[in-house]
Length: 117
Image 1: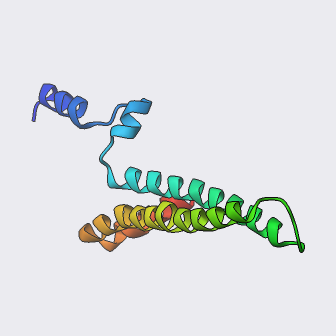
Image 2: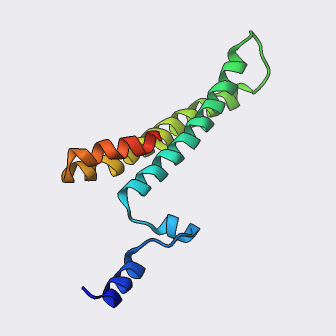
């Protein structure tokens, strides 16, 4: 393969090093990391919802939120933790690891080491 063809292929298939390139990538490791980052954000949001619920229940006749708001918050926290946390976490690990396992188990170990560093 000559240098011109290789340069053209690199320009065509390499992800640009800008924000648009980060969002437009199809690399399974990058997509998996984005899923995990989004899941962590929603885990924090679910934690804040749980904190508000626990503050409401901390004392008898606490008037932090109304009973209707408590019911809505209880439902919303359940939805947050299942749909916005659990599903992205599972998808993130699946995107990052499952397609690697097809190639080799070494790729799975490399991906795990890359996440932990």
